[in-house]
Length: 387
Image (cartoon, rainbow, N blue to C red):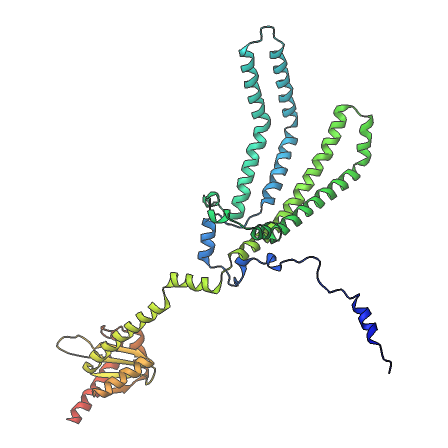
């Protein structure tokens, strides 16, 4: 066995560096306190309230892509008219500027001409862009007007350095937006490179072309780039919409306590409902104690149903149900009947039919007359024999 001297260990300890991280990061910054414990799916009430506040799942990428596509299509089809309007505007400007008797009236003409030309050139693009943006939002979330998003809230204005870092640097939304920006740059760059490379020969010929011919070639290449970029971004926006829906549902998730509180508000406090049920049960029991002793007979199933019948020929056209119950209530009716010497007779089909078809206080229907009459006749015969 080889012995290592202690001096060797002392010398080695001089070179041992404690394993401590150079940068300490608070991992709590990556956690969202508002999401902790939110494991339950949002209720319909939660979704409705969120919609009323203007918090809905939508993507702005769809509106941007559609606006870009429609705007450049309009510009492409109206290029000649726009160029003509601009040339006419320039003629009007120069005609007014070079007049010898230049006056305030000339300034008015220039201002009016500028407004009219601007409306003709920019108006169709602006109107179509606003219409497309409105329709894109309506398609995603429906028509909903809410002033809540522009309502100032002091709670949102107060923040600390940690909250600011959490929202700006470490939030999931910031990461997703950065990833989307990178993907869009890659899409635009890739499509531009592919189209320019495919038209490289034509683009090089513009060196020997005139100004208008070169402009036509460059405009056509730019139009193809914008067209394909818009189409790909529209497809990309559909995936972004699915993500925004998932993100929206995640933000609406509730804690178990919130679900319980909402259920209390919607259905009522369980303690109050339990007290109401207890009070209702006590009322039924008091009614049973009062009405069952007056009955002529109790028809049973024998254990599942019990129906107490009373027949007074002077006041009733047919026998009447004065009490009925199932399971535990049926057991209690039988006990009260036995305590008060009320006959208890087993008749399964009749007991089930009376329980299902006749309410308390109602007379029996015609098709049960014969069956009830047989039961009552047996009861009366038993009483006569007992006497």
